[in-house]
Image (spheres, chains in turn green, purple):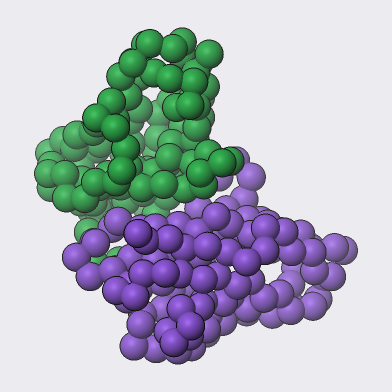
Length: 113
Length: 113
């Protein structure tokens, strides 16, 4: 069974630009969650999508958005990039039940210059 | 607000010894706790979990202890091996939070050969 895949793995963007990251969950998984990981703030929950609906949301500004497609693949978008958005963005998939194990992808390393 | 914190940022252990990684949480409503291992360049990997109706759970070479009275969680690794070197995160979620997981800051485990 293929694991969670994320594309691209590395990305360099300039302040003010926008970026779209993609996550393909494990086959059969309907929940995709996104996390931001930085040395200073650690792993922080961005949002979770289940069956194309945002089910949970963290405390990030509206510049961070996401969506999920009917095949459960998910994208997250960050608009008007800031230097502080440089981070490792991780997605995790699961069946979606409360307390169910999440499987993480390798992440997308975003650098904003 | 919710917070999950770790007591020690770095732990050095001799190969073959037992490791104990501690974690404190503040949300009394948390009912599900997870330990993750993250190796360099990879996403977090599930190690073991425990629900709030238990105080101990054992896996292969790992044991998680939960003390709800003092809101404390620990991960014990028996016979620590070089492959155990990684950053370990505790995490929690609560009813209704589905896949919204709050992570601790992480403890780096260094195994000395």
